Image (cartoon, rainbow, N blue to C red; front, side, top):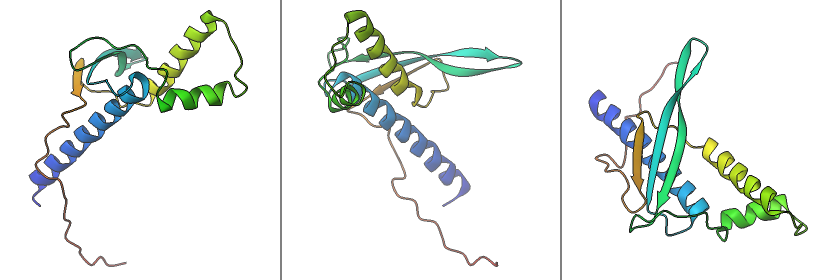
Length: 142
C-alpha cells in the first residue's frame, strides 16, 4: 500500500467506527426504528484553548419523525436492572432525571465529530475503498 492509500484506509476506518458508534447509541436508546442520527457540536473554551463537544443528538425514524427513547430495548432493560434491582418505585421527577442522566452517560462515550454538524444513516455505512489491509511483514532487528 502506498502512503496515500494507507491514509485513506485510516480515514475510512475512523469514519466507519464513528458511524458504528452512533448507530449503536441510537439503537440502544431509541430502538430498532432509529435511522437518521444528527449530531450538533459546539466549541467549548477551557483556559487558553477550546475543543469540540456534543451539543445535541437528534434521532429520527426512516420517515424523519423524531423518536423518543424506547425504554424496552435491551440496553434500557439492563440499565433498569442495574439501577433498580428490587423493582423500586420512584417518582416521575426522579424518573425523568434518571433517564436524562443515563442518556448523558451513554452520549459521553461517543466520539465527537469535528465539524459543527454531522449526520449518520443507520442503513448506510460510510463507503470504503479498502475493506482489507495487507501489511508486508519485514524482519526487524532487535
